[in-house]
Image (tube, rainbow, N blue to C red; front, side, top):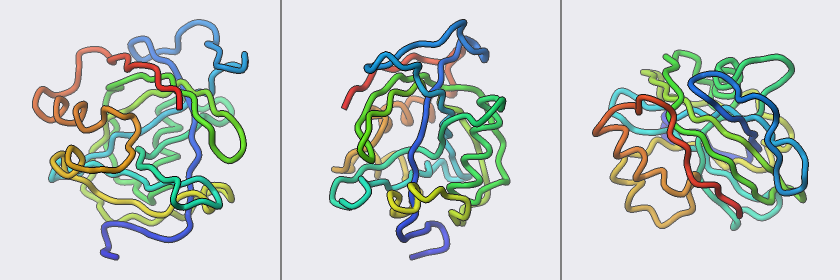
Length: 194
């Protein structure tokens, strides 16, 4: 593989969040099982050629059950979403030379993964980097079993892909972002339940 992507049994399971103009909404939202939604920060990382970095995930033990998704994950301790976004990006990709921008989108999602249901409130941050070589050095044990690699995608490649990508409208959202720039306030995406 080229120096712009990494490969091999390295994994990622991620989390949730909600945003109102850069601050947490009051109170916790609840998921399908009555538990608070997991707060997650995700990164829409673009390089100097406007390619987006996606991770290739799969169900542990079943690489055929696979999908592509943005780097990111759940908040730890008292960290902010911005701190979580940068930490997760570094752990999952090794990329630290990054300019973190505004929150683009918010999404609530629920999906089965690794034998349980994950209910998440996700915030997607725009970020830019000139660093395209990736190396996942800070993955958890579960992540090492469920992520197969990373790849930089052009918007055109993403729009033509016949693969599962989350969020499901990512190609359309990326095209609009590149054409119009970031929204004035975060867009709330449709809830996705898998």
